[in-house]
Image (cartoon, rainbow, N blue to C red; front, side):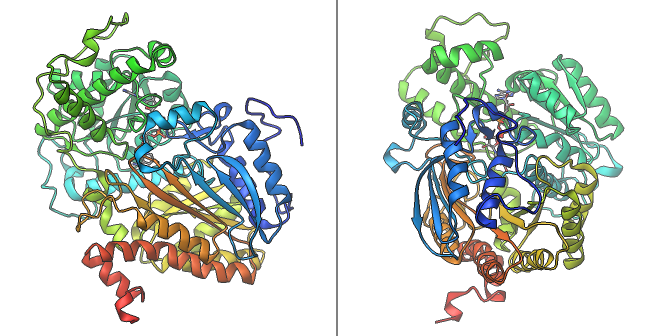
Length: 610
Ligand SMILES: NC(=O)c1ccc[n+]([C@@H]2O[C@H](COP(=O)([O-])OP(=O)(O)OC[C@H]3O[C@@H](n4cnc5c(N)ncnc54)[C@H](O)[C@@H]3O)[C@@H](O)[C@H]2O)c1
């Protein structure tokens, strides 16, 4: 084994491509290639810290663990399974050929200890890492995944609220009732405000302009803005808030689809919009509010001050961060009250605001927490956390109950695949196959065509599209045939986000406002991981805290390799039926009629069997 480095070494960690094996089987090889692909600098946000996306979402605990995982995958036999405990390989055990080659558990904590404070102590001691969702389960494919999800979300918003906007630039507050559903809506002539241009948030500008809208996005780190401009996800950069707002207003009036990144704190952008009486048509946020210490920068600090305070005085940093997130949500609420269609885009900012408000109430004091401390010198003005009505932090909805749940009821979710050959032509072959296979799925075909035109591959060529119950199984088997018949140069690896129909319990996100109140029931993701293990997925992972932070979610990942063999065919049939099937069963059990119909149609209703 070569010596462990403490930084990302582009030569040592280069992803193998082509049709030659470097491991003892294609499943181990796929795990190795996808792990290294996750960390490829074209894919990962901060490879030197092993951080892939989502605040501190990592692929391996440290460089020693990474080297050991690579070494373990190379010796792993076809009847063994490698165990990964929070990013560190801890054992190789005898299983059998149809068992997953890798079993992963990330960031699991006993519920009473499931908070960032305890996690941070363990992480400092080197005992844990945060796996986010696809980072720690080695199936992140760069921004394409989130571009697609964000595109679908904004398309649903356009359909529901702006079906006539293309011919008539919207005035603030004139959107249609959220209950009216129109097809073919567009964001043309609308101003869409949000924040955060990180690994996930960086998809927002492209997703908005793909829906023909104007995006105005606050981001505190200049290199993030520059990175999105380089990859053509973002069109323009401003350092003056007023100039950015002015330009966005011009584009909105013209109905021109453009995206603008502005170097400022989200709180300051929203404050300025309110001062100027400019009400966005849509409003959300994708800063890493799930992680108040590492992921969110308080508006009372510059980015440089934040970096210093975070290490020198994390307690004060957290106080400022919570106060800022509270203000952020209150400003969102003010804009919502004036007509902005406002939603939480899965970063748990409403819960952070709620936690702050609760503490304020309990402290029985009207003073903002940080006022009692010596303020750091800052060029930014401060808002007061007082004078906002209480009890409103959850007054705008999360994006899942607002726009996505009907898709989950049909077993639909973010199905993705990557070409292990590294050859972009293999993805072109799969694109054609998928479009021919589901000609009736017009939304999917529209997306596929746009993705072919606008999405640059990052790392291994990959594709994502939302497929539902029945469709995923059909697609997986067809990919296996492509490999078997040599129409693609190497096996195809198939996976999905953990944000999916049957794999998550996350009461502020995927399972918010479930019909039967079962939002916090976490049996479902556990059953999902168990059934995918039993069915023979290639690797299975169970995570805690993804998307929304410690204590707020339990979720499972699944990846399966189509290597063209009969064994793979049998596994694909089981896993790609059972995995979305869990989502249909879960939503049918919660009382959703659409899920109950889907369950009946796909023979998933237990009462029909007994
Ligand atoms: N909706 C979804 O489908 C979905 C999917 C995955 C993740 N998420 C969540 O979205 C969030 C963002 O994920 P990411 O991968 O982009 O994270 P990231 O950490 O890579 O990026 C966050 C960005 O926000 C910026 N930022 C932080 N505080 C700010 C502030 N106050 N004002 C302006 N900019 C600020 C940071 O500089 C950074 O660029 C996370 O909470 C993640 O869990 C949502």
